[in-house]
Length: 361
Image (cartoon, rainbow, N blue to C red):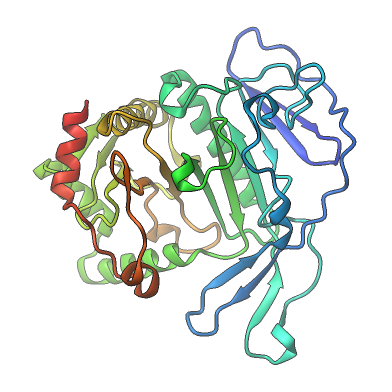
């Protein structure tokens, strides 16, 4: 894989990752007249829960559902410049023009209204866009295993780079797919958030893992993985180094965890064989998901990685995919119990979800 770093007209970094043997040199210039990036991100800590919330009012003006011929993620064409100056690409990563977190925000930690009650700090971090292919009409499911392997290498590359930025505590690569999820750009792409704090979900998982290890001397996800592989009732796909299964306490009408058989903290620790096997297993999962309702499944898929600076021994890398679609034309809404009290009610049990996914193949 060949990696080329360039810059866009407003100074943002763009990085080309080429896996094609005859890829051209990446020397196209961004000819757009862009204003300087002026993010205004900040984070505030909820005094009742201790959780950080990001404020990014500048994102209100971000691109929203443009026509396909004006897609900002497609390669640049004559008279139609985009975020990618080249006429084609394999995989490309660039800094988000409307980031939730940015290394360029200024200011010092303080409190809201100077009252000392609600901590507030600059939202320093970084947000990147990852385009999986230059083909606007494809989806991740339609990528080759070789291309998925390239994407895994890109995720690992960016995890390593973003983890070295000042103030970054956790790196989260993810993909949102489908309008029902809230996607406003239909080109096949994902994002990477480099957070200035450890996320609430991760904090909860780390605390659970610590308590389980103190009692049993083992990692909780390792024991869950072993149990799922032994019983097989909820297993959806399996390879030499990865198993995909519906979690035994699934919250969503479609939910799959893809877990490596070896405990690693993040994507950078995966070896070549594990990266290749993930590509095979994950494509099986996506094909089953799209066959479930005989339509492209809207989903969120994200990597749960270790915090950069602590508790790595309590972390076990895994990917989780979930969908809000509970039937071909019905959505699961997060109503009072889920939204208000975070108590989930699922309309299907995990065994049924797994059986439907296996049958969908």
